[in-house]
Length: 420
Image (cartoon, rainbow, N blue to C red; front, top):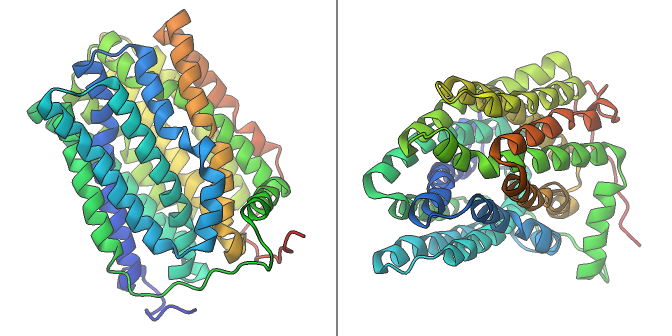
């Protein structure tokens, strides 16, 4: 079904603007929670480094547990209702934190439950979200659409941590999370404003949950292009998560930074991600899709070595440089890779493609959190940060030796037979 909106500038596309606005407001709130939720564990509950890392594990564990069946359901059902229900559910889960804090009943176990609930709903939201954009815009608008969405995410990442640091300092961490709950409610309202009807989901005769689940996995793992992407992202996620799971503990306890200063560091470092969102399309056109993927993969790992190298006397410039360069590489990679996947994957497989890919590449995130927490308990924070950064620095080899490195532009989509 063709869009009723005029072609050209997506800012004139009302439904896309609603999707963009919904993402922007929810991302801004989520940036507050990404700082406030672990700070609740660190500052209020005085959790250990392993307990804080376990909180990150709970948020991403659903990508291992429910991502595959979620992809099947996303391909069977209209996607906008899934997005709205996921937003409302995450708002309710996050709202429970300040409510429990008011009564003095907040525990680390509640934070784990909130992380698990929001993570599960995020699995459904993400599978539906990346499958929904191709239903709203034309194929040749995908890079532009993904760039605008990534730009809003990056802009939220610039303003969100600073706002989070201010809120944590002003009202304490548990009550700062209220901002994220409100953002999800606003996102749901904006999504309900989208008018364009979705194409009716296609299902093969005699299909079943297991059959469709296997078809999605085979599509991802059966193509060497997707295997190289899965290998790279799964590897870099494992190692970078072992760093990120400990970053706030390291910043608070080893570097003695305040919540406000941590928020400022994260805000300034995210200017790299914002620059990557605006530059990704031009870089891809100039260098070609394959070289852009490889070079952005190279840029995403080595800068993390600056984190454990940061001197305690003046750590802020090191942290900003590390996270700025990492964010630049990751965003350029994400826009290029996601646009390629959306353009080449058949509509009937998009939900399963996204969910199967997330199962494989985000399923390594809770494992990375656990590994980082366990290793830090054994050898200390700084050596663990070095190990994670070193592993992330080698992950680009999946792309360098994969079949995509010579790809000049996004090719035309190919027919994929139904699994028999």
